[in-house]
Image (cartoon, rainbow over all chains, first blue to last red; front, side, top):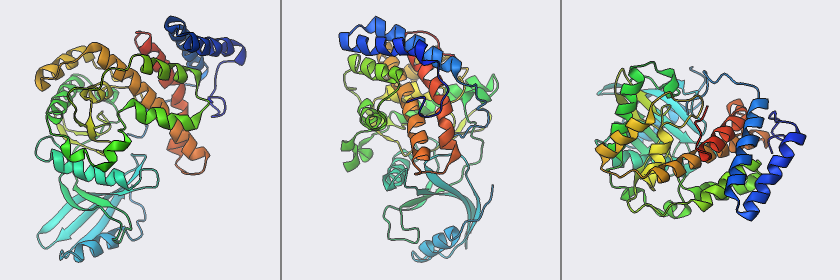
Length: 60
Length: 321
C-alpha cells in the first residue's frame, strides 16, 4: 500500500519478514511479537521516507 | 488570499433578502486551510452596521451533514465555551447555494497550525486554557447531537474507522496490527458520554496571547467518550506539540470532575494515530482517484510513515519522535 502511494519504503527484503511476523502474530495472538515487528517495520519505513518540512502545513 | 467568488455574495444577499434582511455582502477572502469544506470570509453591511462573518458550505467530501452538525453543535455550546456565534443558517438545499450553509461571526485572533508553533511560556499557558475549555465543553449535555445520524457511528469511535479502512485494503501491515491491538484492548463503552468536539486541537483554536478566543470546526461533534478529545488535543498532526501532557491531564481531571483512566487514555491515543493514518490514506485516495484536485490531500501521503511510526511507538509504550 505504501509503495502504491509512491511513498518511499524500506526494501522488500528487509520489510517482508516483518510483515509476515505481524500477520503470523495476529493469527497466533502473540502480541509481543506483533508489537515488536510493528515497531521495527514502522521505524524502517520512516527512516526511508524523505523528511518533510510541515511548517507551512494546512491547519484544518 | 482573496479570489474570485462567483455568486457567493449575491447568493447570501438573496437569501437574507428573502427573510426581510436588506444587506450588502462582500467576499473578503477564502480560507486556504481546512480540507473538507468551503470557508469564505465575508463582510455583511446592514442598516445596523457592518460585521465580519464566516460562511461555510459543504463539499462533496464533507457532505451536507457536516454543516448541520456544526449548526447543532454551535447552538448547543453557545455561551458555554468560546465559539463563533451562529448568525444565520439553512439546513436544507432549497436556497441560492443549493446546499446547507452556516454564517458565523468572525472572531479576531490567530490560529496556529500546531502547539509547536507557539513559544514558551505562552504555549503552556494556552495549553492550560485549552484544557479548561475542554473541561467546560465536556460538561455540556450532548443530547442535541444525538440525532438520526448518530446511529451511523461517530468519527471519534473505532468502528467508524474500522469500516472505512476496509476500502483501502491491503492496509500497511503496521496499521493491520494496530487494528488488531485496538480490538484486543477495546475498553468498555464510556459510562458517561459527553459532548465531544471530535477534532479538538491547536489548528482549530483561535487564540490571543494567553486565552482561547474560539473553538472552530464542529463538524465531528457528537456524544462520545471524553478521552477521545483529551487524547486528540495534543496529538502531533504535523510536528510534536512540545507540551508536557501529564500535568495537563491532571488539570483536566480536576477541572472536569471526570476520572482519567490511564489505560483508556492510552487506547484513545493509539486510536488517534490510526485516525491520522486513515486521513492520510483517504486524502491520497481522494486525489489519486480524481475526487479531489487538492494537492494538500496528495501531500498527506508523505506523513503516513511518520504517523505509522508514532502509532507503533505508542503501542509499544515508547516515546514518539
